[in-house]
Amino acid sequence: MSYKYIVIGGSAGSFQIVTGILSALPKTFNLPIFLCLHRLKHIRTGFVEALSIKSKINVVEPCDKEFIRQGKAYLAPANYHMYFDLGNFVSLSTEPAVNHSRPSIDISFASAAFTYKSKLVGILLSGANRDGAMGMKEIKENGGLTIVQDPNDCQVKTMTTAALEATNIDHVLTSDKIIDFIVNLNRTK
Amino acid sequence: MPVTPEDISKVIVTIKNYSSYDFSQYSKKSFTRRIEKVLIDYRLDIDKLINSIKNKPEFIEDLVRSITVNTTELFRDPRLWQTIRYRVLSKLASNRKINIWHAGSSTGQEVYSMLILLNEMGLLDQANVFASDINTDVLKKAKIGEYSYRFNLEYFENFDKVIKENPFKLDEFSEVPYEKYFDVNKLNDTIKVKDFIRKKPVWLKHDMVTEGNIFNTKFDLILCRNVLIYFDTDLQNRVINTFYQSLFRNGILLLGVHESIMGAITNNFIKSGLVYQKKK
Image (cartoon, rainbow over all chains, first blue to last red; front, side, top):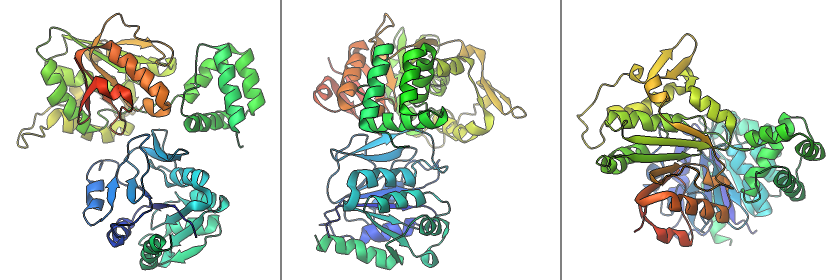
């Protein structure tokens, strides 16, 4: 296996799982992780700090054209879409919301799928709208690995259910198993 | 429908040959997304699109309007506006004149936010405010200064943070009614900027990719937020150089909160937080 990039999407009910993932990762974790999480529009600051508290790896809200480094987590900044470009850098845009969301998970997933193809693992967590379903389909069609949180394990299951309807998902896992899976990606490298 | 990189190159070359616009240094990905959207909205394929560019000059203007992204909000990113208030404008207050350029002003909300802040700080009379955009439609909207009330409701919170509250003195609170600056009509779902603010700025069509400083003056403060993200690094640096040339000594450049200056031109500015100050 040679997965080199992880992209995680989540909305309502995903915050705890993301902090769980970040706190479980060792300092030596050597893949970049992209986080596209919906949040309340008026809460513009403090989110990256909240995620950082328990994380051993560095969590940043990247600037446009920021170079992607291993072992760092990149959180899509509030009110921007986050894309991934050839040449290994992030780009941002303020184009209109997609699925009422900016950042939109579909946009980040589709962009990562196009750029990283079979080197990508896409993970979709709990959430209350359908954002991310089309993105998972793109990841699957570009040869990436798709994982959704088991809808029965989700606080809100709309998002993962939509993804399961949209495409053939490789793994349906509980949040604990998702954490194990990501930690193991480090070791199998 | 999938658009190939060759299609995109053809579109860019055709626009360049048939107009004054040059998109060759736009971020390819973002430009491709916009073209894909245009093809859907206008129900065209690439060949028809290229034909329209060649044969209908008025279509090129429509196309440019569709390609450029127009995002602006009242007091977007209050943290930046607090910086503008307490670290930038406060230092310019003793100037006889304060020249400000909003590059890529879109539908005007950033410009009106600035004017409201200048007025609250008692600096409106000494300010010269210029606003420019490549897109004539948004310039027209900006001049009218009328927006959806409901849509802007959430931005009144930003207004409160910048205008009413003081981040350094938490017990200080100035009661500034929205009606001081806006005619609010909830029934029609409109807010309209009051004339004493609305008539103040000079609005100009300007293409920062092909034109330099067209204002016959230099500036104390230039704002260009969330425009450079659509350009490639070379073009970004060229435009930043235009801003550099257009600033007075010690003048300030403000970009979007997730944009930064990269490469050799960094040496021409002193960076402190979100503020870029021209050296020398």
